[in-house]
Length: 459
Image (spheres, rainbow, N blue to C red):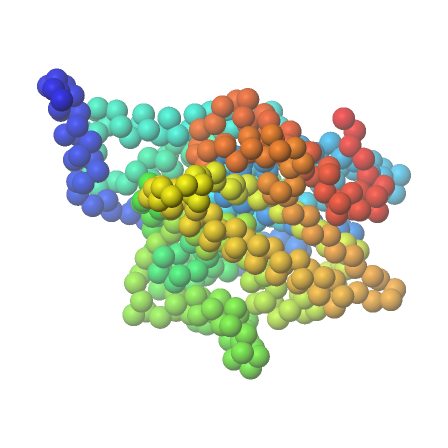
């Protein structure tokens, strides 16, 4: 093949870009001599004091899956917005009952946007993210000839380009302090720490171990960490500072003792992951990648929080000191994972490397998702029983939305063919939004909840 001079030059740039000098992580968390206190702490307990739960403790989990996941979770928010019921003679939206949203990867774009801007999401999010060729924009920024030349003389990573783009075009320079000021549900963004082999949760309790203030941290940087697909995007670094002389908190010591006493392996792993940050001999940098590596549903955070509190009874005993316990525990899981179609097993032709990797990834993801869903569903029932009394029964509702919830085969086929990327067609986004609404409406547990509330969709 004959190459023109310009094409040869471009190929050289690509090679230099891919194999050039190593990138150096940008550190954006400043050290503290004293950790934030009181209302300045972005924690579940502090949020609960400022935003008491009503009759329904309502938690949502948005999975990974690129723009497909963002569109599905957005559609669920629209459906909840349009669903109303009466409370003391006043009409309220089911959306306003949502207390927490835990999210991973693509789902974190929707949760973070809603947490920052509230109902503005219904006016702006489609144009600013769902309909936008984010992947194409990032490729243009990274692969333009002048950008390539510039990148030959910089150690800044591709992820930093993505962060700047998200910060300017989607999250408008907002920090976690803006979550606290918004008055909406608490947003919990999840990533994966390659050093501690565990989920990294963007809460102040996690940042305490780093002697840093989460309220000053950019939302765009957290979302980028949550969605930094391995290999495509280099990790994001957060430094562990020692300036505040942080010591092991009592709640962690209690959890450690409980894990040993009960031989609770899940709790042991969670404790070990946090103890990792207290050992000064360990690497000083938290190295973050896509949250889907450790939990593609964002549900493990809920389990971990209850475990560290000492169990459901203790958690709700604390709640009852502030307010009466809820009557309902509601969890909605928006799972955007797909099932790849391959030719494996259809002939004696051995599967390609691509088909094999896709199948292996699907198997691991679906098995882990199933295990997580089953575990939380069982725990939700147990928690409800433990906090229920004869005078105050508590009813659990576990609402799982995934590809198997789609009734029409043609719609399931469409869903599975939407790529896991940050670039889908406008028509694909619109159809995903409608599918997510249908999935929610047709869910039996959701119908039970609506019947119990006397709620209905107004559209």
